[in-house]
Image (cartoon, rainbow, N blue to C red; front, side, top):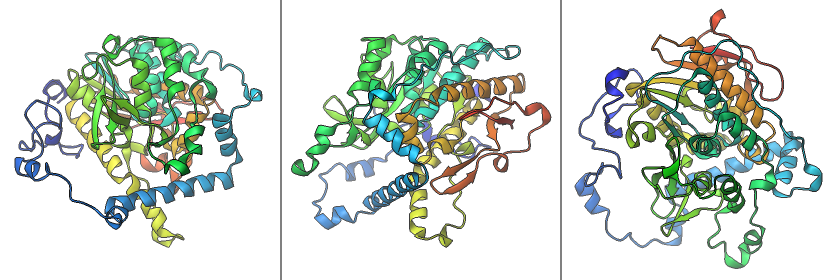
Length: 468
């Protein structure tokens, strides 16, 4: 299947999310903003929606059904923060170090992240190879380890598609830095290097009624950090094409920054834009419009490796944000918990994003051979973990080593089989917004004795992998 479909580009809408079939609908047309003169929206609907929006009262806006989802989102996030404050004082220390760093916060340099290759190098992947990584804050430092394992095998990556947190690591790889160099660069980052709270803007929220404010962090320091290393290098000058989704506030639409879409954009600016999570980092202006992290819509962006760039023969998929295979959170028994509606709201908050990720994974598997690796348990970025892993880089080296080990396991287990592989941590139980979740044996087939790799101990250690 990969030999034929991987080279035949099809509109996104033609594919079912069923991983066991590639059902062509034939009448849905290409992607939005794709080929000129086409649209997925029927002409009649397009005409009906091009007029001026009707006037809306205060209650119309306040009680809009989609606005109600936002209210629950705020409640869920507040619950996560409150739980973290009660259970773990380290969360408060992490926030303090990130937002109010002190001279005493210095920590030793992480040293060399990767050691010698354990065992023999696996054979390289052939043909065009694309790497697609989810968002997931600092946990996506594991992408550097994935790239290191591909380098170990002699595999050359043809295109990177990154998202949100993985943009911090993917764009430097695309710029031509070796994985060891990216590891050294990012693992040595201190909060003061890239975190700049907008205290002035926060102080005047009352008098200004919050006009123009949409994020606690400005984002200037982050861009300056990467500009200090890449200068004015543009996306067109990347050694390996690299893309990231961005989301527009004014028109509520998705776009991608990369060599074919915004060739003149500086790499440092693209990184800043890709991680500008609404309410956390201020939006970035582009062509007079406000743009944010596109991961809030498309957490697993496959378009760059299938549509924007020539389609790949093999895709390496890195999931660091959702449970195994992008399954939804298991909140069985939610109706027996106190304040059940809050638990249900946590599902509503991610339902569309998770379903789109599953459809994208199914499409990827329909069109090309796909190796799915999940080096870091998604619980690491669940709830307040998302912010902790961004504000504190101390676990990033361990995530990188986990990525290398997971990718090597996948390469060694799947040579010549042509089957889809999943490498997942076994036996990790992580706290999650919906309650405890078993992210290991309960979600995969039992591993054979030859499908297990053991790692060292320590925070974020990769434990035992299962190859399915």
